[in-house]
Amino acid sequence: MTPRLDSALTPSRVIEYLDRYIVGQEKAKRAVAVALRNRLRRRVLPPEMAREIVPKNILMVGPTGVGKTEIARRLATLVHAPFIKVEATKFTEVGYVGRDVESMIRDLVEFSVAMVRRRMLEDVQEPALERAEQRLIDALLPRSEKKFAMPDFMKVFGAGADAENEERRSEEDRGQEATRAKLLTMLREGRLADREVDVEVADSAVALPILGGAGMDSMGINLNEMLSGMLPKRSKKRRMKVNEALRILQGEEAEKLIDSDALAQEALEKVQEDGIIFLDELDKVVAKGGASGPDVSREGVQRDLLPIVEGSVVQTRYGPVKTDHILFIAAGAFSGVKPSDLIPELQGRFPIRVELQPLSWENLQQILTEPENSLLKQYSALISTEGVELSFTEEATRAIAELASQMNAEMEDIGARRLHTMLEQLLEEISFDVCDAPVPRIEIDAELVRERLNDLVEDRDIRRYLL
Image (cartoon, rainbow, N blue to C red; front, side, top):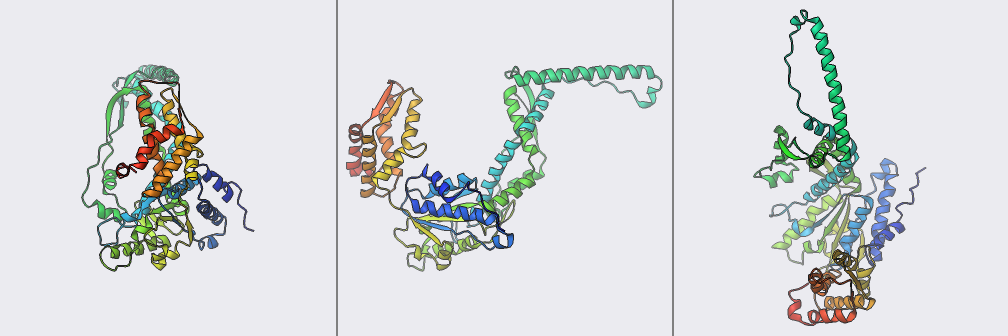
């Protein structure tokens, strides 16, 4: 009998989490929540069945600034999955100048390696600290003088003296151990923090650029890393305070405790099983009907993307990666073209299509106030560092949202990104003056909003130079 999944990451709970950061767009949230749950369901199936189940990739269609990227990023954060966002426009067909599509998989692997390394480093901090403390105590203790060692054949003439020397050495060892224990106690209590010490640390020399890197990158080879691995590790003596030396030595010891092979293997597994790639601006590589010039390259990019999305093996410097179970979330405005203009094979690899709606002024007002760490909370927190309380009335937030919605309707619709410009214009004078003439409290009302922003909204000449 197939085991049942727990209720920790049900679609409804995923949507609850996304609602904390993204306003509206329920269809898109439901689509990614179900895709995530299906990925978890696949893991508990028998291996022969799990291999046949491929992820249902998602195509999000909607204008910029409505939450497409944020939905994918927050989803990856929720499950601690390797995630990258790539622009489809930076890829070109093989033979043209530009990056090949396989580089996105190598970038995802690098992200995964960094993620796993951070977790492994956290796990070994305690033993690394103990090793660093011993290295630091070695540097703090005065070096013992080397004494002449008597050859073995001479020892027969002075057996009594030899026993006396052995006893003296054991006393010295006990004294040194007591000194080390005392230094360790002082170090942990912080009484040595400001003392200076000379320590041997790894020399982080800057690698010289090597010609031909682009070609090697396409094969997943890093020449700089290969050569650095062949050369001996260099170290240099530096004089620094004890607390800084302890931090550096702890970092070095933590790196030594990490198994590089286990790190690479775990990172590759996370990419293959949990990886998410957000492929933005997919509409920009759709041919608009021509069969020459850049349209040829655009369709070529789609054909190069196809084997990656379908499932293939990509060589990286950590080993081969199978892309069969990586979740691809593509997005685009598709204002001048339609999703059906994609080549048929690529369309079939994005079976789930969701349309994201433009943001109304009500949505913009919600974005200002409701999400965790919303824009108004961010600006209020920044001003609070000057000892000033900044607040907004409900009428003020509505006025900001209505003016932003009006600008989106009359100009290019950039969604919630318009709010950043509006708030910067609104609070520029306050942010400048609050340092020199602080007041206990500042309240932003609708009248002040219109006074500061009406000129921006109504003056078309100014708007051409602002978002």
